Length: 275
Ligand code: ATR
Image (cartoon, rainbow, N blue to C red; front, side, top):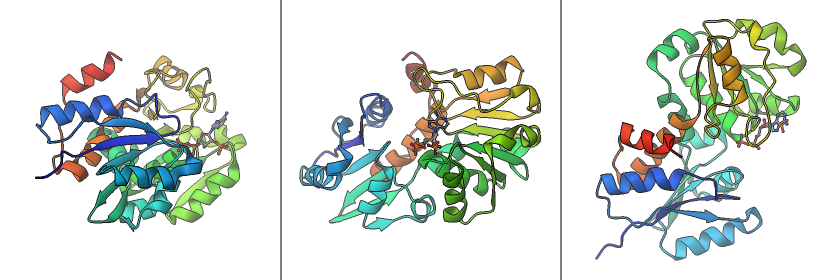
């Protein structure tokens, strides 16, 4: 008899995660033989021991969130090309005694975009990525895949330069003090920093200098409208938050584990909107 699949998300802390709502919605909708998708706190200091205990308990897949994505990368025995490209793993799959690491943030970001945004604002256009953490790596790869020219700006310049070297894709690094000079030439601006969470505000961009045809994206989805997006809104610049990316990266992880690519339905989006 086969056992019901066990999946979940690990992070530190992980309490804020809304991934269980998304995965459990799809498990039910698609009649998947799986138990409740759970949130599991894993202390980075005991990562290996705690993940091994989960494997022992029969877990078949884990999503990985901040700050464990690099540890998951080192832990995985088999890595997909995209996870190698980003140096981070957000999806672990345990089967036949091995650990596979994948990164669905890249495809999640790509699928979160409307085709007209890709055509008008990314393909052969200048795209500015704010931040140089794990999320930035996935976004830089995605923009590169979509044919955009990537400019990276980060508070710590060296970290932007590190990404530039690591990703081996053609990117430019912009010093934060020069941002005002180049921002007007950007057709796509994406915030991957944590500025906008909690009581923080992202004031890296002077929106009066941004082209009105540009598109502004914030990976943050809680709050739904960060000050960054509301500054774009005030100037009638189009924008979107990170909720669709969250759902799309989850869909791809779900597909890896259950062999079903779930629908990003209005029902689910409304459920998430109400949170
Ligand atoms: P993630 O995996 O979500 O990308 P991360 O790796 O911790 O998270 O990266 C956080 C990003 O937010 C970094 O680019 C960080 O800038 P530094 O590299 O200079 O640390 C950026 N960030 C966080 N707090 C910031 C602040 N107060 N001002 C500017 N940038 C900030």
